[in-house]
Image (cartoon, rainbow, N blue to C red; front, side, top):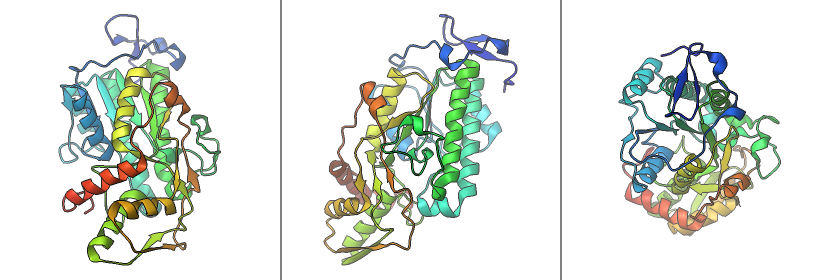
Length: 352
């Protein structure tokens, strides 16, 4: 891989990219000259993490939109924590576009008990992919983070400018720090090499391909599994973690995929962009919607000895809205879709 001291990238109006050998020529983010436009449907497009919840949705969206040269690799085919393997993969395929949707993810319990895993794995994945993408001069990269990057007690709704203005939620601070490092990596590439890379921060996601592990999943897929099992077993009582008072925003993963392509074709700037619906519900309200979606008619109890996490996480999506995109899948409709998918893939779903 080329050393960062030896290469920079500028846009002179010639065929993209134009390479120079003097790092002094690398420009600041304010100097990035790139006009967002419709992406070339025939160009090689790498979706890192294409088998996961987010990556698989992006893959489906790209196929739907006519992209003909999609690149993916399973974790068995390519360990993204292996730097040499990632460098060789990127040098072989040389994608023009890349979405970094690969990450080690989990719910409150997993993040709280295994913070080293979430910090170490995610930092290595990001560093390897972003460094290798820079080495082969991938024109357009979209890095996906998480709403947990914002301070625990930040003013609601969460504005992009709230980043690094306060303390993080301690139950997932290691994961959040890794994602913050990814944002800064993208911004640094813009400053040093002039590449028009961008970042997006989705809110809580759900939908086809989710992780339904009873110990490692997020709140919504965990509820789907729990309520569906209660219906199948004929149970009349369910106990959920926490008080049920925290408020959360949920975005169907197919909406996120559409937003990602929209951003790659309509946005360029160093500022990360929030992606969400702009609406939230309490976890108790979510439980009621889940009961409706699964047909559960029993009683729901709450174990307030378990952690609640951040009191509220609602994204300010005004920047995304100004770019011409809003979510289209409402929560009840999305839950019906997610429950139906889980029931048809119950035995083969992740974490099943």
